[in-house]
Amino acid sequence: MNAENSNRKEKVKYRGRIGQTGIYLGKLIRMFRYQNDWKVIPMAALIAGLVTFAVGANLFKTQEGTFQGCFALVCACVWNGFFNSIQVVCRERPIIKREHRAGMHISSYIAAHLIYQMFLCAAQTVIILLVCRLMRIEMPSEGLITSSFLLDLSLTLFLITYAADVFSLAISSLVKNTTTAMTVMPFLLIFQLLFSGGLVQLQGLAVKITDITIAKWGLKGLCTLGNYNSRPMVGLWNMIYKFRDMEVYDTKPIGEVLDWIQRENRLDEVLRAAGENNQSPEYLFTAGNLMNCWVHMIIITLICAVISVILLEFIDRDKR
Image (tube, rainbow, N blue to C red; front, top):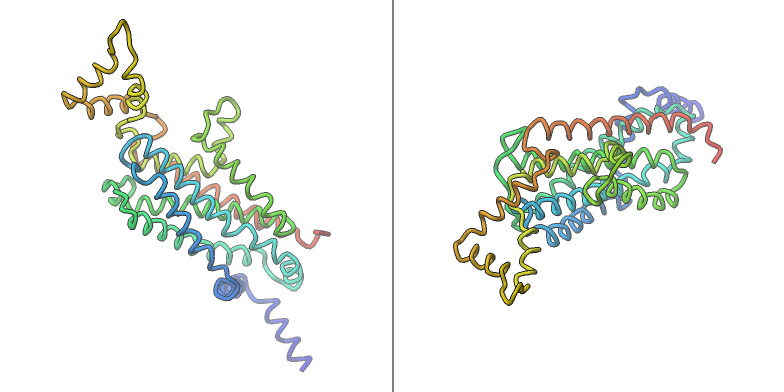
C-alpha cells in the first residue's frame, strides 16, 4: 500500500505542465459547480439589468447618452472582472504552498485560472448582450474591426472584463487572505473609475496615470465603437431651455429664439451642430483607434498574468 501511494505521488509530482493545467482546470470547474462559484453569472445579469435600465434609453443615440451608457458598461465589466477572481488565489494560499513544494508548476496553476476565467468572462459578456437585447437597446449596425457592430462590441466588453479579471487575479496572488482582498477591491475599483478619464477632468501627471487603467481604454473603445462624435448633443439645448423665460426689457429673447427653432423644425439641426462642436479626438470612429484600445487591454492582461506567476513563484518564502 505504501509503495502504491509513493508511486501515485511520484506521478503527480512529475506530471508535465500541460497535464497539471488540465488537473487544476478540472478542479476549478468542480468548484464552479459545487462551491457556488456560479453565483457570478446571475450577478452579472443583475448588474447588466440595472445599468441598462438606468442609462440604456439614450445609449448610441446622443453624445451624453452614449458616454454615460458606455461608462456604465465599463463599470459593470470592471466590477464583474474584479469579483470573478479577487479571492480565487488567496483563499487557497496554504494549499498552493503545499502543492508547490510537492512539485506543482505555478505557471500551470495560473494557466488553468486564465483559461477558466476566460470562459467565465465570455459567459458574462454574452449575458450583458442578452440583457441589452431584452431591454430593447437599439444597436448600430456598422462595425470597425469586423463587419458586425455586435461582434466588435462583444470583443470589447470581453477584453474589458478579462483584463479586469486578470488584474484582480494578480492582486489575489499578492494579498494573504480573502479579508484583505475584499478590503482592497473597492479601492481598486475607485482607482479604475477615477482615472478612466471620463469621471472627472484630469490634468498633469494624473492624465498619464490613465494610460495604465483598464477603464480608460475600455471607455475609449466603447465610445469609439458607438461613434460618439457623430451623435447629436442635447445638453446644450437643455441648458439654454432653462433660461427661456428670462426677460430682457420686457421681452423674452431666448424663449423667442427657441420657439422659432421648434416652430421651423430646426431642432435636429441645432442638436447636430452642438454635437459637431463637442467632438473628442479620442473617440474618432476609426478601426485603428479601436484596435489601439484592444491592444492596450491585451498588454495589461499579459502583464498581470506574468506578475501573478512571479508573485506565486516565491510563495515558499512566504512566512505569513
